[in-house]
Length: 144
Length: 144
Image (cartoon, rainbow over all chains, first blue to last red):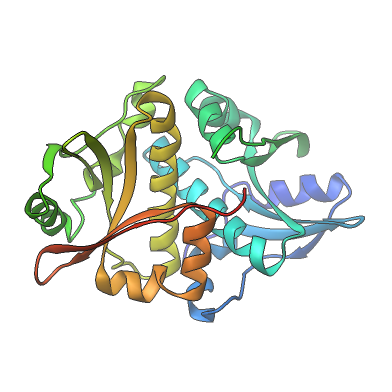
């Protein structure tokens, strides 16, 4: 079983400091075929609420051998959860939480920005030293 | 280094039988940051041409411990290649090639269909015993 992500507890603490209540850790989706969505990687996904907003947060460090593999894994989980949530709980938004440093090295690059726009990615940036949310980025995609 | 996918050579042979010329094996994208896109998983992606059509094909068996992990990996690579290709080579379409059996067990389920529609997934189905393409599926998504 894969462990929690390296910055799992930091992201949780940063969200709590930002006024969010963590409602599920891990968060798993049940739809159609339960077995299918009880995934091994679910430990990297939590749910939170603040006022009337509900979010699912995929927490992702980029510590693997390949940035590309890490990015594919992050995007795959993100789009899968988003696609299913649009049906089962459309009011709940999906975010990818990464460190400021990961953002600068991966999603903030020219190619990373292309991917973020095309996929309408929503990202939470976290300062892992200060344990604080530094930015919420909600891309809207230009065309499909 | 990860090896080629288990049905790699079968999918290639099926495409050739279908009149396609394999132009790249593996196919890698170079854009912005070369290092970023020289990924370890590129061996699972090929490119092909037929008449004036150009395609990139991600070949994917679902042989892992978790269908969900396999699906996330497949979707992540698919959307990443598609997002970048829309900028660098927009005429080249991206497809995910799976066996008929994988399709029935994963993408053909109710939840799989939700994901395919939402992501506008393009899929090539292959009969691995007959080494033949059985269907081309080109979903258009309903809303973004």
